Image (cartoon, rainbow, N blue to C red):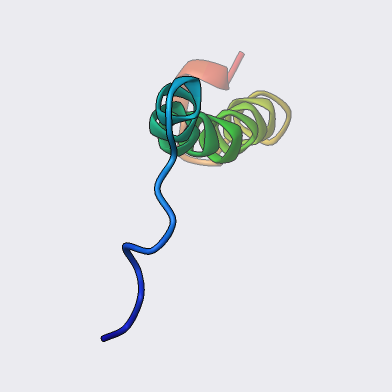
Length: 53
């Protein structure tokens, strides 16, 4: 027996532990998308014809 089911959240901690996954995903993806959009703005692609004036 591995023991993964030995500790279970009880009461309000069940809601907190359920929300932990999506919050962690948002904490990782928001800075990544912000960095991508910032780099896209300050470092345009050389083949992008919209930025050529």
